[in-house]
Length: 463
Image (cartoon, rainbow, N blue to C red; front, side, top):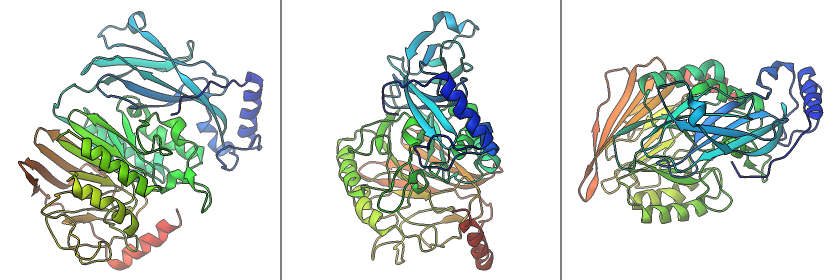
């Protein structure tokens, strides 16, 4: 979230505009270009009570924590309070107050204010309690723990596209993931959080589905093509993105908070925006990885390096980014976009449309594993590949990754909590990672071709 000057709206104007939305009457044009809201979306209207609270990082996870939230436009002065988490209830007595930066955003639901605060000078590996508000109306107290200053074991969650029917059908996946990884350090979202970039009601569903979990487990999101708005030739990042998330601004110019890097307990996380400026990001990535000193490197972006879908090859992206990923032996790449599941495995020559001639999905020099996944209900038909030892279609999944010293363990679970795929990577001296397959006996979920094509046609209606 960019640090902008606070803007003020009068209570009368805010009330009038809110009534317009409730009655389905267009008021001022939405700056995000979305159509005016109707009463059916009134549940997502902002109020003076903070909502859409989400933890992210904009700086060092060992000593800082950022939080972003939304209120109605008549809240012009917001703040956050923080204290070391104490077993007793009197958190207010020891809490410090941090003034928030605020900015306005007018959407199809009317005007709102988005607020962000970054807690600084925190102690590594410490549990804190915090709340956000305007000094009178406060959220409940939430808790988070800062990263440790050294490479201790930890786990995190990775989600592919949520996108459609987010509250009704994606929320169960988020909850199942938390049940399996209640101590997760953070959540990676590999793009397409929603379907329509400027539909505020859809953003409301995404925040509602994550609910209090968003306020306690930091998110690391990257934009997908559905976070991009505008007509061809004038495509741009959704107006919702930067007000909603406070992310690092250490990427290439013009890609602030959509291309970035951070370090968590010995792991370098790199989030990239695969929608634009691919050459600039390739040069930036090469520079970041040349200077990297962390043991593990995990990249996440939306469009797959090796597509799992039919007729969805990303040749230009692969030509720009794969040489850099190969050069630096990136360990793991987490992606979305294809609404199916697939991952590369041991060395296998690829002679298919999804790879350049003679390329290897995972060769003896790099050892990189590429994963494509989907967490929401929208499904595409699968392109089967011999170089992917595990694939799935028509299946909602979540992934839990464990880091422990020289070992990375990857587990993919279906929405019902059943293990679907697993492997481990082990660091080796002056050699690529050792990959050990641990695929469970769970039957591979591959639909007959006719059923798969019918499912794709049904999903195309949701595009």
